[in-house]
Length: 78
Ligand SMILES: [Zn+2]
Image (cartoon, rainbow, N blue to C red):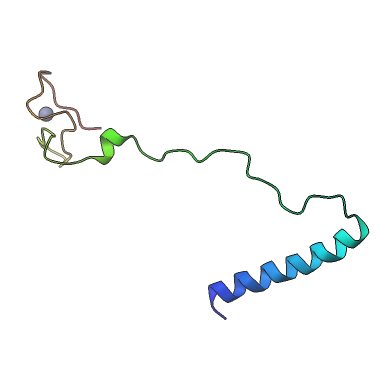
């Protein structure tokens, strides 16, 4: 059985359960809405590893994430 089939079977089973239950208690809401909003995974600054970056590499192979030709004396490897 594939993953999708499995999921569908589970959903149908749950739906049948809900149908049975709603016959007993019809006032209950069937679906629960998600409470937490989706959180952004990464800052856009880090996502854009393009040509506008300094690109200086340190000893351990990490790349400088400051802008190209940055005024700061030190490179930033975060
Ligand atoms: Zn740099």
